[in-house]
Image 1 (cartoon, helix red, strand yellow):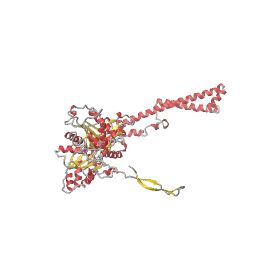
Image 2 (image 1 turned 90 degrees about the horizontal axis):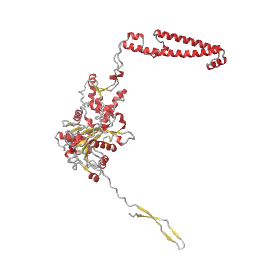
Image 3 (image 1 turned 45 degrees about the vertical axis):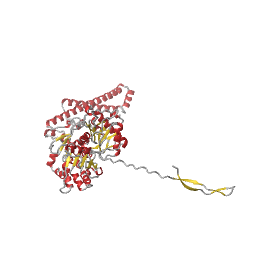
Image 4 (image 1 turned 180 degrees about the vertical axis):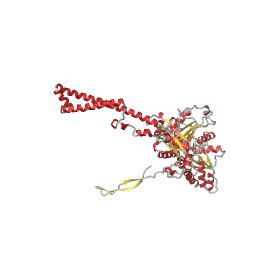
Length: 604
């Protein structure tokens, strides 16, 4: 993202970035010896980053960066699915795009498996039998046990990995930046993270996540892009198709900023000078065929003369065709009249019936009229060939330009164009630049009935003692791709100043690279904690403790095992056993008394 002062009075063009397919890397010997190196996967809801837990500039950086989307047509084979950078342009296939996420939780494990296949194949890892490399994978804060269980089942059962470690992406980012600042990993602070689908407030006490006080705000980058798209589509209804989500994401990343004081900044935009200086004009692609400058009188006269000539030629052809048709009909009538003169009365009467005529007088009348019309047509053709005469209304002058007249051609002045085609295809992005980031602080702007990020932060702090609040406020850490707006740190500092008690101390620190620090933090953690130690889940742990099991570490969630109530043993149910008492009245007759029932326990 660029600052708001770098682009003054300039016209910007949409880059319309096209992704190119990722290369298939060959696995290096350094990743295999002396033991298989862990694979680091930052499984983000907007972008996935994958690479090796190695040091150095080449292997120590993410090898793969691609959007977490897959596109497959209905009925297409699994091998025909396009993943991430294989899709050069997302807009034509947006209706086919699928993600493994619901908000920030993985729920579609079929797509997740396709993502793993894509990562392993492009990193050069053979997956035919098993993946021999340990996996470090990021997950959502307070990830549901079912999601982790399905993920562990996929990794251990499908890929047969030896070890897996789960961690929270924003805590990995905190881990990495603490190392850069030479801070201990056992410190206390609060993490503000905002991603593509939601934002989180995560308190960290003595280096461990306090899961009981974590909060989520369902506002992120996707809501900001949709909000910006709605604003610009309402502003420019003539360019609905051009205002795409991909272009809105580009506007978010390159042209948006956060206002330190939202209402005061809106007041500044009321000034015409401020508007002209700060508005960003986004040029849409357009065809130059409709462009035209000032048209001179001579050019307009020449254009209308050509139009007049074409219409004259068309009408001349029409007259010739009509004269030919009239001449043919006249010849036919004269032929019928010759039959009468030659005495062929029977054939003459038959032809009269075919011509729908009753007598020879009517035939003679038609012949006279047609002869007159033919003679007039010939004269007009001769006159048109000798001199160019103006056409009357019946000859098609109404098809000409209605503005054409002799007076206009003599006195017409240079005509300015009705509008500038290039300017018509420009989007003037003004207050929208700061409105889209404001939804983090005021979700009500997009109709969300929930607290903003700073209100939620105040609510979280209120759950601690004053001493703990002071310790948390001294280390407020910002990370996540949706917090890269210029002015975001200053806005949060201003909000904290208004929130905290008088003369209290606080400090806000922004991640060095908010979007990718999570991957680097996971890499550093894997280098410092070899597989098999704290934070790693082995296959034996998976089989003994279940798929939802989590080995905790400084950047992980808190493992809260699922409590399953033991079934209460059922009490013995009584049986109704009928007992009939018999009395003998006499040897000859036997009478039965009414049946009585007693409760007898069932045999177990």
